[in-house]
Image (cartoon, rainbow, N blue to C red; front, side):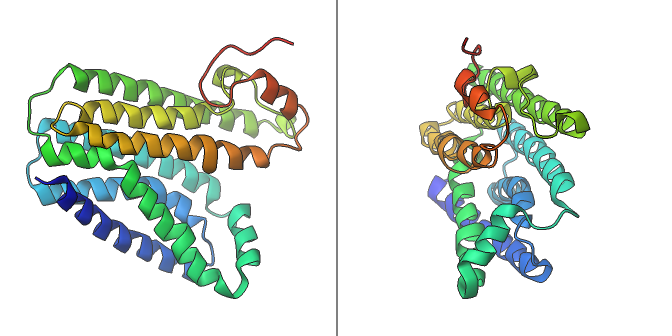
Length: 259
């Protein structure tokens, strides 16, 4: 099936999905729901496109499964963190800054923009759904292995952070143990690695190279736009953070610098 057709199907689903959550955000006066909607959005789009193709080949089902595991875990974690705690500070700030244009800018700059990034990010999945009928090859197994490594980094990094934050003695301090000793953002690094793994799986099908749009998009977003920079802006005043930043890689894990 032509990839351009599946991109069109994905775009239609994303538009409906993001518009629905925008309406919910208006009713609840909480744009933080956009964060919860992010992971499940990939599941919905992947499933809709898979049903549209009507093929359900093994590679397609594997990719669908990987996306589902990632999306559900992320949604549950963000939901547990956000629900009942009011609107996230980022959205509160925009609510004040955007004034009378808040509704329009929320729709376009929060929900529709996020939907656009979702379509770019999910490209390797669409590629697999478009031409996933061939037998599994070595690249599939390599890709699954890479995805597992990424999942471990993201899930374990989040778990270690949650345990750290639950300890009252750690308030106002920086986590620098476990995976956080080797990278300031093991969870973001892991998320990017998972999408590189799915891209490697996509290389097993004709035209799979097109899927590189996905991991490039999420890696650039996490490293230079919404992930690392936005998180660290909220950490700059925490004692010890500047020293931690000097010693520890921002993204790719490596041994801490001495001195």
